[in-house]
Length: 124
Image (cartoon, rainbow, N blue to C red; front, side):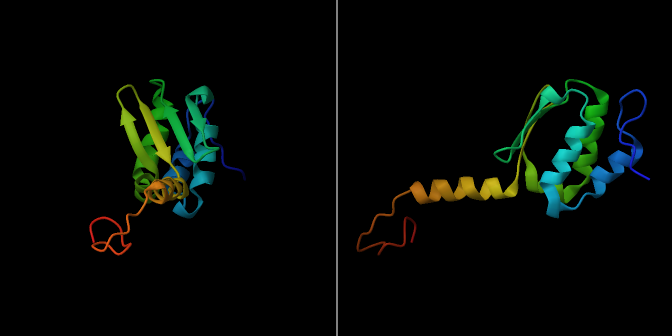
């Protein structure tokens, strides 16, 4: 029997919220795709193409329930949470994107080769 994700009023079911809480951190993009299905106003759930999701609850309690379920999935939350601002706006970044951003910053930083550093970079 397929999982019923929304009740007749459009709120996420307890079963759907449990699925978010228990979702494997090995499939974070799948988790966010599933959360998008549960989201009341999809225009407030944007991104994903570049590994960055901007999500706003819009003040709707069903959306807040989805984010609360995600927060209970400690590994997924810790791996993706990037920022939050007042008004229920959240930014999540997929771990591979975080690595790419870090690598780009580090690669663009030129190393000064001097007798002191011997090409090992600043701080050595």
